[in-house]
Image 1 (cartoon, rainbow, N blue to C red):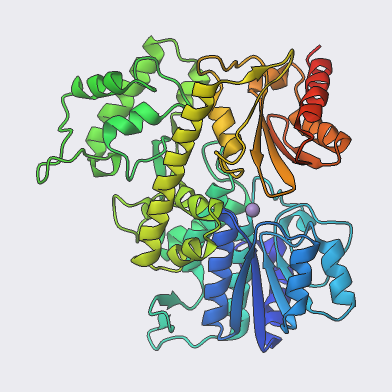
Image 2: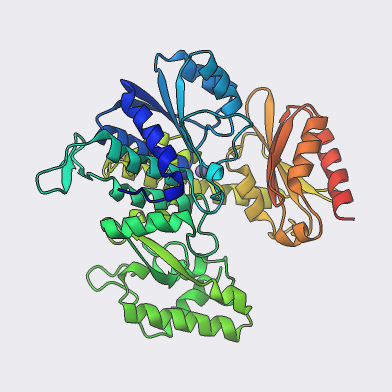
Length: 492
Ligand SMILES: [Mn+2]
């Protein structure tokens, strides 16, 4: 039987065979939404194939992390959502006989090869937009089902494994997690999943775990009260609705809909509306956007393809691929990979509640951080503005806070913002955020962060519009001076 992505089939089969030969496997995965879903897919596939395994997570697969892995007594290590970029270090370990690596990843490989390396980029498939780490893990999981000859129940359908979850013998049910991973990896940012990802969606639909359809492309369709859904949706700014509590409410009231649930008076959510009600709101929203002069291209992006995990309960984060991935990112950001993995593996009690608490805290941390920066203000240099949060904003969120604070009183949108936060006793984390209009004028923060940090014995990089660095404590002012100079050159 053919796998979902024909180009990857042969390599996936080889990797799967190697895993089946192992007595036991160490599963190592990245900590983010894609990495967590990658691990959950791999874990279920291994379990169903009766291969015993243990799971570890790493924020960064650096030399130390790989050394720790090598120090375990596992002979076979399955890396998911990372491993390709670290193949130089991993390859040395393989040559030294520490372990045999099996890799399911989608990042740019280092200049080295290994036999059991499943990566779309090796087969002409774009790893940034067409297949995620979870997608690569899914391809491996499908091959593993083929190779492991797992016992199929008498009815040809499901077998039950220890965890009590009904498993499909072909692992196609895992496509739902692969879609969450791809969405979490921002691969649907153009409105829908494309390329190899589409093949996985198709398998998920066939397996009955995914439903797709055109829908309003706003975040929070399952869980946000209707007025908040519209108020908080700021990707497409609709005057009088976006960021406007009273305006959003008034807009809905004028539509003559039942806004509260009959049974308990709670706000209804998008997911509670009938198709007709959804059409009413969507067309009124488009009409309002047109009348307020929102550009046609922006209006088009109000509608996109929704990926619904149809076996999950209506009105929960788990039913919507983008809400699910946001929940997972919240667990990852606070280094609770155990919680995120638990949710992916079906723990609907402890893990789900903990994940929700982490997400609520994350949102509160963001808004407290934004308040702090706005209240205390930033220091303006000629070409950049900056603040030092010390230990009052976590280094893992200081960049998001900086970006969200831009445009608030005293914080300009016409120069990039540089934010410092304490990382540990020796180092400070630096995050920089720009705007797309600055990028069009020549701003490239990955260069700024890289050059300015190396000038003060740190290191950094990233993207043109958002980048980061780590610098030694005490070198912040020097860093700002360098960054200010480089930004000045870029924008001149
Ligand atoms: Mn990824």
